[in-house]
Image 1 (spheres, helix red, strand yellow):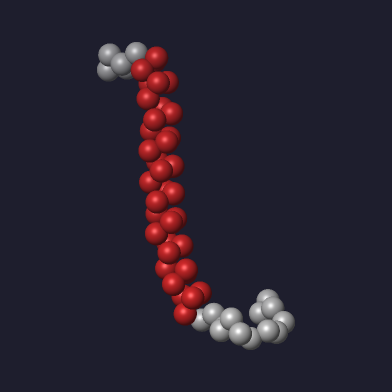
Image 2: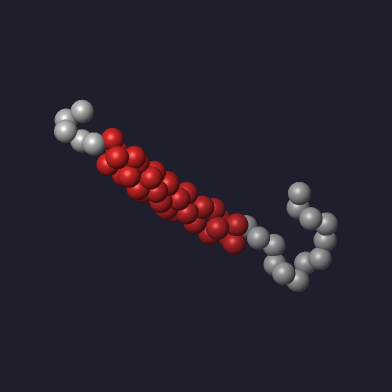
Length: 54
């Protein structure tokens, strides 16, 4: 297959998987940052004691 040895493919495959996982993890972190800001915006003041909101 284009002069590429199977050993090289099996050696590179975990690196490609790591790179894809790292990229997806960074995207998930960026997405969750948006929710962190909103939860601080809509949170109740700490002085209030009451039943949980759920």
